[in-house]
Image 1 (cartoon, helix red, strand yellow):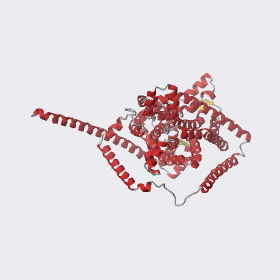
Image 2 (spheres, rainbow, N blue to C red; image 1 turned 45 degrees about the vertical axis):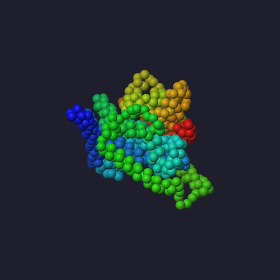
Image 3 (cartoon, rainbow, N blue to C red; image 1 turned 90 degrees about the vertical axis):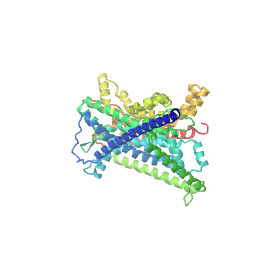
Image 4 (spheres, rainbow, N blue to C red; image 1 turned 135 degrees about the horizontal axis):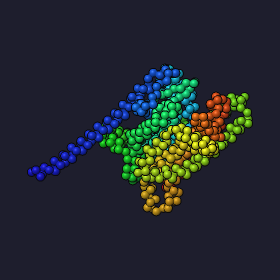
Amino acid sequence: MNNAQNPNRYENLIANAQLKRIKVGEIAAFIIVLSVFAILAFGANELVAPYPIGKLPNIVLVPSALPSYAAQTTLRMLIALLLSLGVTFVVAPLAAKNKQIEKVLLPLIDILECVPVLGVLSISVVAFIALFPNSRLGPESAAIFAIFTSQVWNMILSFYQSLITVPKDFHDTARVFHLSSWQRFWRIEVPYALPGLIWNTMISMSSAWFFVVACEAISVSNQTILLPGVGSYISVAIRAADLNAIFYAILTMLIVIFIYDQLLFRPLLHWSERFKPEQTHEINATYSWFYVLLAKTRWFKMRSGFSARLRSLENLKNLRNLSFLTKPFSWPFSANDGVKTFLKFVWNGVVLLIIVLSTLTLFNFIRETVTLTEVLHAFYLGAITALKIFILILVTSLIWVPIGVWIGLKPAAQRFFQPLTQFLAAFPANLIYPLLVTLIVQYDLNPNIWTTPLMILGAQWYLLFNVIAGAANIPNDLKLTVRNFGLSLRLQWKRLFFPAIFPYYITGAMSAAAGCWNASIVADVLSWGEHKVVATGLGQYIAEHTTTGDFPRLALGIFVMCCYVILFNRLIWQKLYHLARERYSFSEGG
């Protein structure tokens, strides 16, 4: 009798052990989620505190203050990230689905990506302080807006790139199932774009750390506004030449990046694995312990079941309205080819008129101060900076493309290098400038050569992250096929790796080039103590006239930069995007 009952007893013991394990997991997940929300709530409470302009907060250089500063800095970045996602889901589809809007938005995004964060702050902080007087919401909103401008453009380009390279057979599937435009966007295009968008969201979060000092230590109208955060801590530590405080700030950044990588980005990458266009999956490609922990909780399972029921109800509704879905949406009026041509002509005319009026306004502003010779000199300086950027993009491509492909193809390498590259991308470059100035002065080095790498120091990670995203998104079926055919390394690159990463590479290279234009303003003029190092280039021209307050020449410098950015966009980036759209996607046997 006892022997007969033993199997049931063992099964009960196993069930009880599993139940205890699930309960422990649910408690752990609850504690982690509750702790994160408590930290963010603390940061949110600090953001709305009173802030009389002119009275600086006391930024103390003690390690015990860093957890509070880190919470507030992270909250600013997350708010800016949510705003960036919202703008991305509006602007990128407009550029991807309308060629006339695309011709305007792509160059505009490229120009806005080059606008220095300091320039954005100098304009926005006054407006936000006037909007929220005697409140921290004013400078906080300005800081969040500046962080937003350092994040959003790369995310828009990533989402746009994915939308224009959705495989043709995916669209054919949507037509077979009679999906409406709205359903095709959310069920095919967004899932296809998610892996690349998540990788670019990570690099956008890291780029915000790159500018955190400028965003939290704001100088305007001969006043300094310090917002409690890691950036202000670093700014005060640099002024005080406190190396110990800088070390603690860097350590705090490393810890914070590791935490939000484990609790946010790695779970998102794990979740996005389901959207890869393949039949077979590699085991633990982007494993996340926190995602697995959440997936085992009853709340997560209940939510998944509820979502499944909603999807089944929606599918039933779609079947009932199949006759409606088979008909394409149309406006009450129809436009023939003549009307479309006329509307296109009007749109191009309006855009051209805006460009001409803006150019005439600018030259009317500067013509009494700036001579034609100086205008030509500014374009000459712009050509020097453009040549530097071209060489930097070429060299970094030769370095990071093979490394990025190797990391993207190796799940173990992804798990190791992802947090490391996030930290390197987030490392504030201004902490390296003093060392470089000392070396240049001591060894009498050529500033035009040795300051140039600083332009790509922070921007190179856009290229690496996008290449990793492209390689990681290669369907495992294709990798197995290449392996079974025994193709040589050269053929693997020609037939698989290069076509797979090409659209992602364009996005990364375009963002890196824009980052170089932005960084040239800082990299061309370096100072440390009594030493000052100046390199020849458009960045030096803009920085010099920004310091002296010579607005006509400053406007000329920014105008020249915009001209070169538009020229690069029209001659290089748009053509490469169109090439990626036509040839490089996993469709039609490509």
